[in-house]
Amino acid sequence: MAFAIKAEILDPRAKAFSFVAQKTMYGGKHIAEGDTVFVFASENAGGQGLIARGVVSSAKAMAKKRGIARQTPRVSVAIRRTALAKRPLRRSELRRFSDWNDGQLQTELNFKFYRQATNKIVGISDQAAEFLGGFF
Image 1: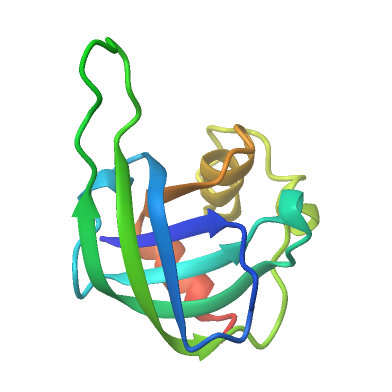
Image 2 (image 1 turned 30 degrees about the vertical axis):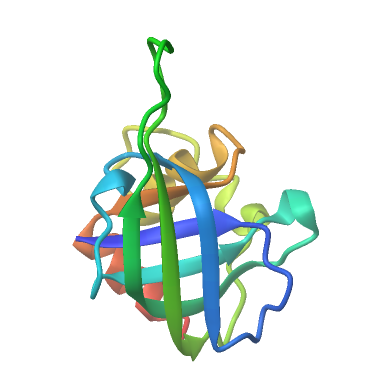
């Protein structure tokens, strides 16, 4: 399984990225060292969408806080960049893919990233990873 992360990115051309206690959804809590990850610079924080592909160099699950019934799992990850995106993929390109049951790869990405606009790590299908690979 491949993963994607949407987060605030201060330097889109950095050779490495580090994210602390990131929210996970859709299987994102299973991210592990050696996994492929696609990095999206959050447009809510002035980013431009898909910017890089990388490999997870470390991943550590954060302990849940005591006394809180429902908690979203959080993970801290370090990513070594392996490629920069050669063409954009932004929310504006994915927005029209909103029929959640149409089976299109763009719909999977729109659903997982933009249905709830929070920053997060998500698991993506092999087909979605292959689709994203075409941007590099």
